[in-house]
Length: 102
Image 1 (cartoon, rainbow, N blue to C red):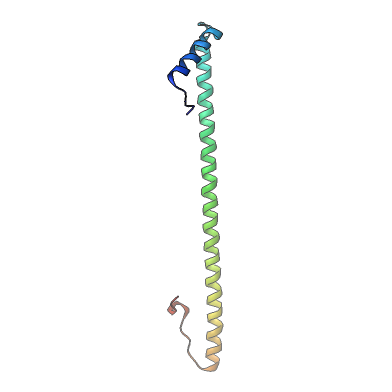
Image 2: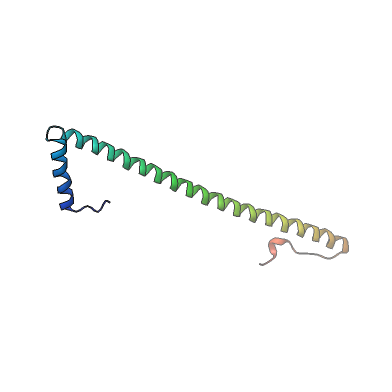
């Protein structure tokens, strides 16, 4: 994650031991571990929220596409009804739209 090698980690630990001291080092390490854990959980929560939002956008897009398809089908049905009415007045027969091939 941080791309830290063993030698860099060892140097950080030695410097921490010198600066903090051997008495307080375990408490500081525990506090640091808790902080890192909280940060990881926070990043994971943000990641899940973003993923959820992207899925919601995708679903909304699909619903919009389905709405367009249903509106188009309604328009075709309306036009075919009008054509049947006109044909009925003129005495000709027009097939149903479901019989049409696209």
